[in-house]
Length: 116
Image (cartoon, rainbow, N blue to C red; front, side, top):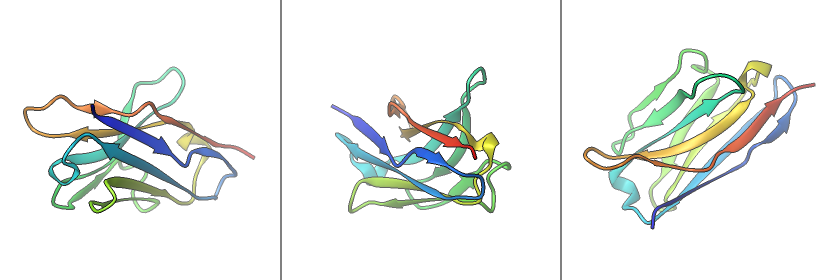
């Protein structure tokens, strides 16, 4: 059974930092592309950052230069380091695991709130 469990969300002031983690089980982690989406209230779910099995990364324009995605294949974990957070970064952040010809797997999400 595949499980993706996010952690690290919370309340932070504008300009602050958070690091999200997503621990995966039930998959051969190193074979999967991993990433993060986010969904704010009343809005669609949008891609934030992605990392391929080979370590190539991709970011939404709105987070470039502020967020960094990384993975640790030994720990079956993907991370999202978020710096210089803004109120518009407030959303539920979802981890996903993706591999060609396989169903994309999703975590349950972790809330990030940026507010003073």
